[in-house]
Amino acid sequence: MNPFLTKSYIGPEYFIDRIKETDILTEAIENDRNLTLFSHRRLGKTMLLSHVFAKLDKKRYQPLFIDLFATRNITHLIRKTTEVFYDRKALHQGVFNKILGGLGASISFDPITGSPQVNFSMTDRNMVLKSLPELFKQLEKSKKKVVIAFDEFQEVAGYEEEIAEATIRTIMQEFPAITFIFSGSKKSLMNEIFTDANRPFFQSTQMMELHEIDQDLYANEVHSILERHHKNFDPEVIRKILEETYCHTGFTQMVLSRVYSESVNTIDFEVYRQVWSGILEDHKSMAREQEFLLPRLQWQTLVAVAKEEFVSAPQSKEFIHKYHLSTPSSVARAIKALLDKGIIIDCVNRGLRVYNVFIQKNLQSFPL
Image (cartoon, rainbow, N blue to C red; front, side, top):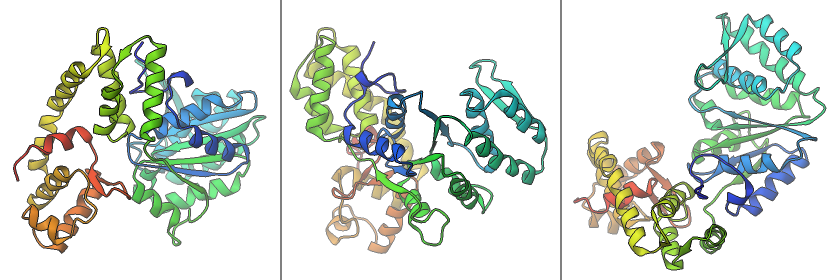
C-alpha cells in the first residue's frame, strides 16, 4: 500500500506530524471548549480531525463529522446532520423514527454507496427548522460525550436564510454538553464569522489556525515512513519536493505518492523529474484556462504573482513597473478578486502566492 495519503485517513502510522495541533484539539474536547479550526484548502484539516477522532476513547466519546460542502440552506444542513446521526447510530432508532415521522421525512439509501439519505416531503421550512433543536436535545441525552465537527463551515455564511448563523449559534448555546468544532477552508470568511462583533458567533469559540508543517519535521517523518517500507531514497529529493510544494500538504502528498509508486528501487532525481514533469503537464491546460476565465488585469496580475512566487507588496511601484500592470488601485482590486476566488492565497509572513502549486509552476513559463 502507498503510505502517502491523498484521500482519506487510514491510521496514525501514516499521519505526518501535527502533534501540537492534535494535543490542542484533544485538550479542547476534553475540557468542553468549542473550537474553530481554519486554514487554506488542502492543508490537512479533515485529516487532522479524523486523526483526533480516531484517538478518542470510543467508550467515552461519540465523535460525529458533518461535511457542509455544497449545502445551500438550513434544510440542507439539517438533512446532512440527520443522515450522519442515522449512519452513526447516534440516536436510538425509535427516537429517530419519531422525529422523522413528525417531520413527514423518510430515509432511503443510495443504491451505489449504501449511505442513508433523508427526504423531506413537507415544504414548510419552519417545521423543518424545529427539528434541529429536537435532534440535539435527544443527542444530549447520550451516555457518551458528543463531539460534532462541522466541516466547510464557511458555507453557512452564504445560506439563503439570514438567520442561519444565529440559528446554529443558538443550538450551541442551548446544548452546552455537546462540544462543537467548526472547520473551514476560507480563512477570510471564517475570520469574519467568528471575529466580527456584529455577527452571532463573535468570540464564541477557541480559534486555531492550521499552518504548513515545518520542513525539517516533514522531511524526518517522510524518511521514517520510507525506511519502514524499505524504500531506498535520496534525502535531497525529499528536500526538493518539500521546497517546490512549500510543504502545502495536499500538493506535497501528491508528489510523494507519485514518486513512491513510480520508483522501482530508489526514489532519486530521475524519478522525481519524471513525476514532476508529468504532474505539471497534467495541470498545463488548467493554467492556460485562467487566461480565458479571468478579466485581463486579473490574468496579468496572476501571472506576475506566479513569476515572483511570493509577493509581499503587490501595489508597490517596483512590482507594477516590472510586470507592466495598471495603477495601484486597479491592481488592488485585481488582487482582492483573486483572493476572493481562492486563486491566490495570503501566506502572511511570506506574502501572496498562487494557491495551486502546479498551476503556479506552469504560469511561471507564460509570457506577460
